Length: 320
Image 1: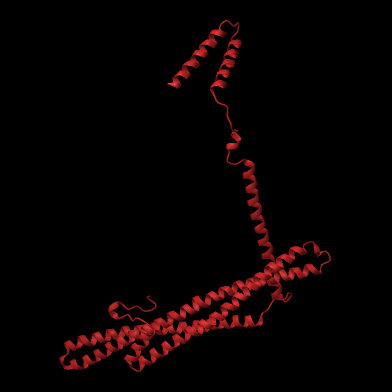
Image 2 (image 1 turned 90 degrees about the horizontal axis):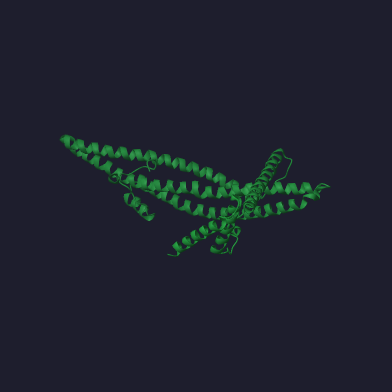
């Protein structure tokens, strides 16, 4: 109802304005009078705004431009620093190979790293041979199983040789059973050596690669600082060179300490793992080829190894 009253009053005021403006002598004056009256009515009906429209804007174009410029400058600065560091490291490597620059050498740590790489290479050879042995022996067990089944079938069809076929069939079945037990030990051995070579040792070698990269950066900034210190006009960027040298020196020292600790723990872990695996390998192989089934089963029980038989679809390490 209030809305209707307002619209009626507005229409009344417009009619009154027309009547008041009717005696005027020109159309321009009539329109001017109507416009003035209308503005007067709206100025009374509309409340005054208490806030400025500019305050409601979330952000101004100037602020967005400043943020974009800041991000672009930051990216450009990162690219610049990366380019400078890459150039210095490449230069350091080239000069080291040409014998024109010295390199930081930790004789003890370098010897341990070289020994670790040699150890990994030899262990990888053991792993390759152990896998080959496991694969070949798997096919032997499969053949023994098939041969035992053939002997058993012929025993039923050859009454005159039934006894001979039966005890040969029983022998092949026992060999198959013991062979599956030995295969369980061989698979466990190859799995453990594989973990040692390709995960445990490889993790330490990754840390060593980071350490070696840090050593190159450290030597590059060290050489740069020494070169700048000898120049008469080198004081211009000497402070920046000192800061870069100190930053990379701290990082290099940190990684060197981490590598030394990892090498120590890795060596202890390697000895422990290989002691267990070599004992398992020796006992299992000796028990199998000596025909000691009880000792063979006891060996697998000692190391908590579960054996998969033919009925459980035993798979070789290749098929696994």
